[in-house]
Length: 487
Image 1 (tube, rainbow, N blue to C red):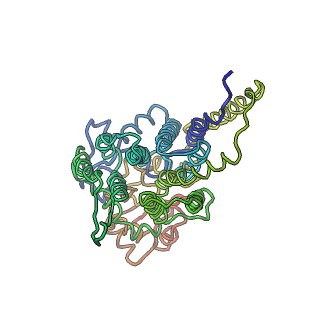
Image 2 (image 1 turned 180 degrees about the vertical axis):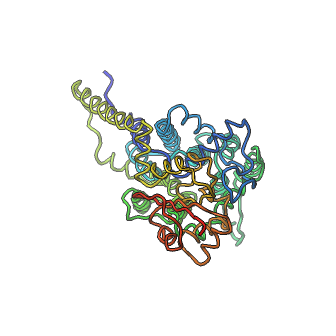
Image 3 (image 1 turned 60 degrees about the horizontal axis):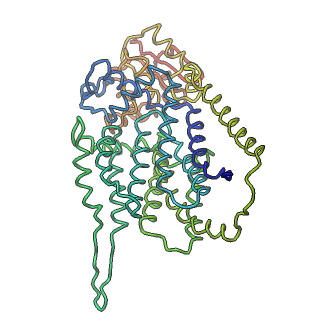
């Protein structure tokens, strides 16, 4: 009789749990909506976006849509299944990401499965319905291919240029692929000191030859080399926005859902320290570079959840083997039938509970209510006021609600939204100048001929506008709307 081995199914159980937990969350974030709107525009016009169509501050300026295939897909999924459909898509892509992440791991199956779940807890911080989600799956595949090449398990390097074509079209951070190849190339470069002579001999890694091919592949997109500088354009606004926008700040470790990053980092340090083998340069570069990026900006935390498990499981492998030798498994008869039934019944119960939770997140109205409570979308009351009253004039809008307003109120072009690469320091700086009531804030409103303001009540401008003579025409728990009427 075949012996029952529940441990053989641990990876599949971990991946199923990752899917259920992710699909049970509400996936849209403030940027989801302008991605949806971009996808909608491209579907309706049967052409790619090349110029801004949605703001009055950058109207007609060049703006290639980074992630255009994903934006179109998100829009089609939303049309078919609403926010619930986006939740399911996010869960599926996230679970598939960790399927490939698992292929890059080594060692004990139990350790791999537990590490997989911890890595997913770290990366889930940014598991949302936006093109950035697809960068995670490309990073996971790159890590798998490069790890296989490193340990000579298989050579799938031909996949990397092909994936780069898909990556550069799916999200603007395809430059990470260059960084990964460069990191492995540097880590695998051999440095030898010739005997009897103090001569340093460097044997370059063949991976360096892959970088020009990746560069050519990255240019195979409708916008050409322009997309390669997208990350630099987005990063150039950090000096101002990093002080106010949460995902560009360092992680707030006082929040419980951010703390898995610390657990994974410290556990990796502990296992590397307990392992008697010298830490390979490639492993050091993986942990150090992605830990640095994650500590620098919360938006990079998800990448650490993919890279650190590779080093952690390899460091844990000798310890797991030593434990197995000290406490060998007892041979015996197969697990009794009633225990098998109990195990699988418990698993089925957990799956059922997970699916019930997923089902709760499918109705569109329920998702919108939760998003409104979380402050991720403009309150329904404020939107109803603008739709019903249709006050004339340009709208100065909330930065966080810009994408949602672009999606729900296309008749009102926006001052700004989450497209930092488009608005740059000039417009984002002016937005903060008004919101924070900094010197010259009223001149900004006059310069753009703004007659309406919709903001969260927490911004200083929400009170300053009243003192400056603006008429408060709507307010609720979260928002205020002011209107300027000439004296």
